[in-house]
Image (cartoon, rainbow, N blue to C red; front, top):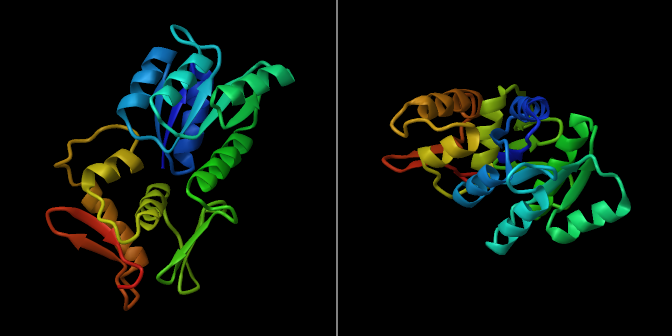
Length: 225
């Protein structure tokens, strides 16, 4: 999952970005509204965290422009403004949730996860289960045929991305964009290395091989393989 954080306070931006990365998300940050708008309109994000008080273009105007372009990316508004009127205005502008400063990162993470579940049509527990593989997105636990499998954060992110796109081939570039938070040369082998590590944990000791290579195209998670 890839998240855009638009925040001009370097300390808060760094704190939030670090937390999301440790939780397995890819993160892009922007220090002002205009650069945030440029990223939002040119890159593909699963969610965004936007501060209201931003230089060059304030957060509410940024959200309005994003919505005017037809983007439905879930947005959490960050603000030091606590009044009901401020929260109402933020939600009416196009925000999906509103969190006042100061805040606990655990709450921000929980709210992001809730937005992602709703955006993906998952109204119940944040979990994925198919082909004998079960993923608890809140506890960040993975099981294969009831056997616990320990994954590193980036391995977890890759598995989640593949499972959310089950039976769809995803290219190396798509994986780079959603699992890493910066650009690599698409010819690099970091994706191949990560897929190999994940396969060794998910498929190696099991008869069914869920993660398949489509030579020259990318990878696919096939739950019924």
